[in-house]
Image (cartoon, rainbow, N blue to C red):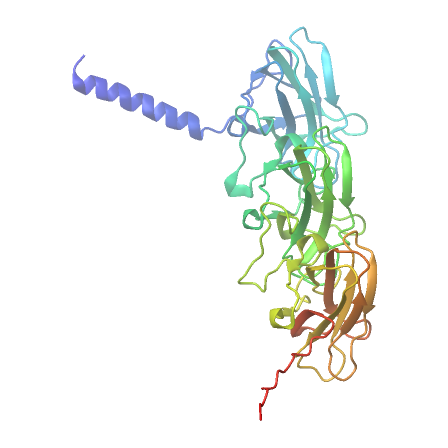
Amino acid sequence: MNSRIFGLICLSVLIATLLMATAVFAESEPNDTFATADPIGIGLSNAEVGNTLTANDMDYFYFTAEAGRTYVIETYNIQGTGNRATGLWLFNSSQTEITNDRYGQYGTGNANARMTYTFSATGTYYILVQDCYYPCNWTGTYSLRILPKYNEPGAEWDAENDDEPNDVMPLANEILVGLNNAQTHQLFNHSNYVTNDSDYDFYHFEAIAGRTYVIETYNIQGTGNRATGLWLYDSSGTLITDDAYGQYGTGNANARIVYTFSTSGTYFILVKDCYYPCNWTGTYSLRILPKYDEPGAEWDGENDDEPNDVMPLANAIAVGAENAQSHQLFNHSIYVTNAADQDFYWFHAEAGQSYVIETFGIQATGRATGLWLYNASGTELANDAYGNLETGAAQIEFTFLASGNYFVLVKDCYYPCNWMGPYSVRVCEESCLQKVYLPVIVR
């Protein structure tokens, strides 16, 4: 074979490969029986789009599943309103029904019908798509895909479409623990799709036994307090805890979960619009933050050592007037959140010792800051919630019965207040007044 012919053959193979990589797969009629079923490949890039159901139509597809693998099978991108369109059925090679979503009731986001199934045997399986059970009689255009579980071969997401689809746990995106591993995504507008619920974004991460993590959505632009909700699940899909109403965020955070894990392993986070009434769509950020004294804890030195809005994220402050820190309570009115900016600090106190905790150096003409003191279990020990009417400062004097770590909260004072701006804070033994030593004069 001469080099010219060999080159032409290689070029033909390359062109065929590129065409396959960019091909748009669709059904070919007739495919109304098991015998005439269309093949469909597994994977996001093998989806079959532009399929149609006409009156009394049945569309059969076949694929090869591997034992022990989990697949998500769904119809999607059906234009319209409401939730009634397609149904889905799954059969084994002997044409026995295994499972179904016959009413098309499990799709979310841009999906209409959905089946999630773990296969016990390798072999050929069949999918039936037709109009959903009564009342339905739907006709129109739909797409179909079979997606592998997030940690199994062939798993992929659409990086140009916000890393979708991630609407169910098996399709969860990965997120790493730590401030620098935060991700920004969106809950998209699903109102132009025939579907059963809003867009869901699932994430998976690894937690370590005995560690505490703060999970929160944040930086949601807008007003009010209604946007995202958060749900936390274990690897079996059991709900552990939630902030379903998005009610626990403060500062620039909207929804927040604080949880201490008893078992190491993979866990799942769901972000979606909060419980009724909500129906929110838009851009949000998500982060998982370790507790202040656990590995990976960090704060943003270029952003006033945020985030420190909850006790587990408290900044350290050393005892002594000379160790005072200057920070600010920032303007939270541009964020969808539930309360003002909160700054937590922690320090170590000795048993029997009296301490003075105070804010100072505040440029205000009236009340500004408030102070709250907590023990390590979160029990409030004392407060100066209303602060000083004239200076805007706040002060707590307290004698501790037990040695340990204690927590100080600085935020705007109790109603009416809503103050924001720069302040300084310090923790001192006995008094924050600097001692002045006069020289000894010997005559």
